Length: 351
Ligand code: DOR
Ligand code: ZN
Image 1 (cartoon, rainbow, N blue to C red):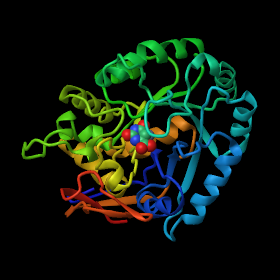
Image 2 (tube, protein in one colour):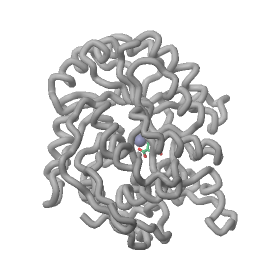
Image 3 (cartoon, helix red, strand yellow):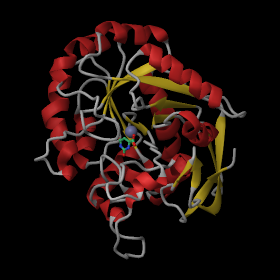
Image 4 (cartoon, helix red, strand yellow):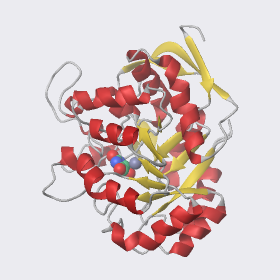
């Protein structure tokens, strides 16, 4: 490693939204260029609730892959109040389903079919614990009386703690954590727990939703995601966790493309598109924290170790070469505005 190039084991993205159809075919190449594998989220419409639906979705992804380095989609199922234990066993046997995603009903994009009460999922959770299939959690409560900035910490006390007490052997990934409280929970928890951290939660605090980098006021919908960006001390806690070398923390972009018109809207969708600049954004965050030497383990080792998959053997190289994030990218018959559009990033993936 020199100061101007950084070669690391090819990373994986442990939390990704690919969507479907022509839009998926447009965003998939960005991920396949940087990452060897990705955990593909199941919040399609209708959601991916069965192994048969996951198999068909996986085939569509494989068919849409461009020529280039091999890329493996790691599929997930969408947990509902009615997911049968048999479906969980079939998922484990499939070999291509690597987790089951809990979306509290109404928590985020396409979550209306989500879980209304975990008590209804006891059979499925028992089966997941028995066959050792991880539960991936969107960790936010949805009660109207809970402030949107507090939904993650309330989820820890009201949902996560009791869940892990009832299913102590269940492997859990606390997805896209955003708060000091979530960091502390993951650090202190007993049992098998991991957490993904996005690049945007490492780089931005909640001011980014309301202020330009120059400090000019205005709502900036492309910085709106769920869980929403938090205050600066939370960002600092996430940075410390990501750069700590603790194997419980690993890379998950939560790259979530939406058509430009659905973001720049009176009721704009939640989600930040980062797939086209993902590793570059993580490199920037790690470098700002003086911890570029910790990037490889976070991006390429901790995830596969947690999921019980082999680490990748191939490499990827970043060069210190400033470039500007494009203003718009094609997305089916619409466009996406990537996060940090028009801003300069210091690193560029070259292989
Ligand atoms: O911001 C988000 N966007 N958070 C999620 O949990 C879902 C995602 C999406 O699918 O757009
Ligand atoms: Zn997500």
